[in-house]
Picture (cartoon, rainbow, N blue to C red):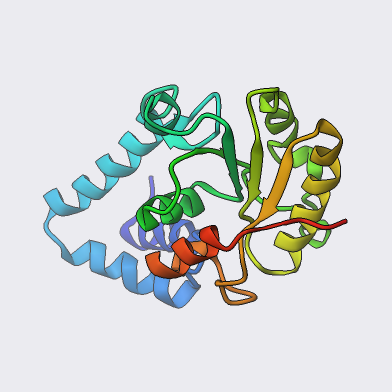
Amino acid sequence: MLNSSDSIHRLIAQLARLPGIGRKTAGRLAFHLLKVPREEAYELADAIRDLKERVGFCSICFNITEDDPCPVCRDSERRRDTICVVEEAMDLAALEKSEGYRGLYHVLGGRISPLDGIGPDDLKIKELLTRVDETIKEIIVATNPNVEGEATALYLSKLLKPLGVKITRIARGLPVGGDLEYADGMTLARALEGRQEIDQ
């Protein structure tokens, strides 16, 4: 049986595993949760449990969703001839907020990063290739404008060019080294409008 000290240490260890949370911040969060009313702490625990039990990935585009296929893939008003490829579902959400794009999406689930041990087979690239048929006119590569994002964009371009589809890259309205998730809507809308075809 864990005593209270062991419980605190266990919670701190779990919180510190979250991205962007160091041991010090994890400690502050753990002690905050100790002070809040029991109901508030249980609401957090229930929200995490619901997330893991009810939320999954769209079988078409790999966006996060409670219903499969996701609302974007089900939306009959969207353009069906364009697919915007993003690294993560957070990037899709950021682009949707810009209201500058009304096509389909494909979430890779990351980016090629050999230093982190992430190769093409670890991403949803094969699934993207199966979606490209004669109805698809354009693939917009909207990976982040950093070294890994650029490498992923180039890799995708080489795979997709032989399929006879137009491949474009979002314009440089985004800061190099930045992430889509933190960009404002206007910047994202301009980046989409100014996209360019990828040269090999």
